[in-house]
Image 1 (tube, rainbow, N blue to C red):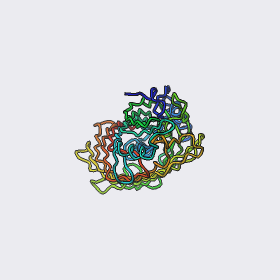
Image 2 (cartoon, rainbow, N blue to C red; image 1 turned 90 degrees about the vertical axis):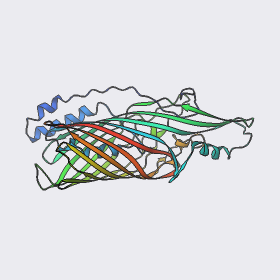
Image 3 (cartoon, rainbow, N blue to C red; image 1 turned 90 degrees about the horizontal axis):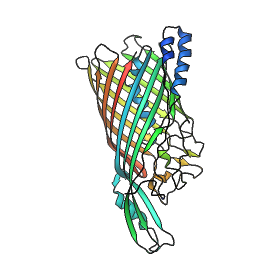
Image 4 (cartoon, rainbow, N blue to C red; image 1 turned 30 degrees about the horizontal axis):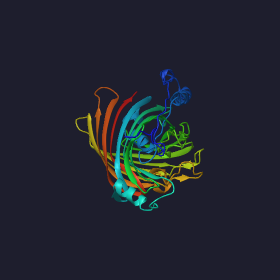
Length: 384
């Protein structure tokens, strides 16, 4: 097996050491003050959150963490709420459009275009498996009864296995597997404001409309390089180098005993400082929950997601001749997934545990790319 450090021809994954100091002492102080002090306290909370940052790209994207928050108890907190989310995504299938491809068939197609005896050695690699793990610390703070701030700090751990085909100038072909170094570290963070546009009851609403607007900050590194001096895959960089606005709408309607929610999010991406621009992302979640015995809330979600094509304006990340995932033509996807869930409320506290398993029903990839096969999510939420 080859590591990413040993295989300089492949832009691999990497790790980043970061440290973050989180403190919420000011929150305790601000809770007992008036609305003005609440607002000042909110800004201090934002400052504390920004001491560490992270972001993940691709089909395992930012919108997932924010959407999870809007359907959990963290936004119902009277003063402030905390949530620690864990997400595990397994990616093995390679799709061309809606059809699956094997790694060997992709490699064979590429090799068939090479000269039988090239002047220089030829190589091309495809991912065979990627495990993406993400821990997200999410905090909310209620400045007023209608206005709330939210901040997210994810930490990502990505592992990738790849397969490569090589052809020597003598015309000899060889295929080999590679085990890549893991990506681990902080990246971009997100700040968002939520406003309750409408509620039929301020204490126990059965109908509620919430609008949100936020910003993804370019705080993560996006210029990490391999030992060979190439930039690592854009999708594996911890940051984007771009300032991206985010828009959110959430509607909740209780038809006793069923609770229905609709969540719409739009992530408007912009060009990063290294010239790479990820495609815009839109997600729509339809959620239904049925409370049982007061503490158990099983549910079912239908998740629709679309990501546009990436653009490498300066060509710094693109190496389409040697790597499947270093080609912006192989970006952009539309997917439909189903997600059974279970929410467990902790009696006599503001705590709850959310468990979810997401299974794609339909995926249509632009070009040829690796997609999510399944995703498991767990979170613990505490509302104060």
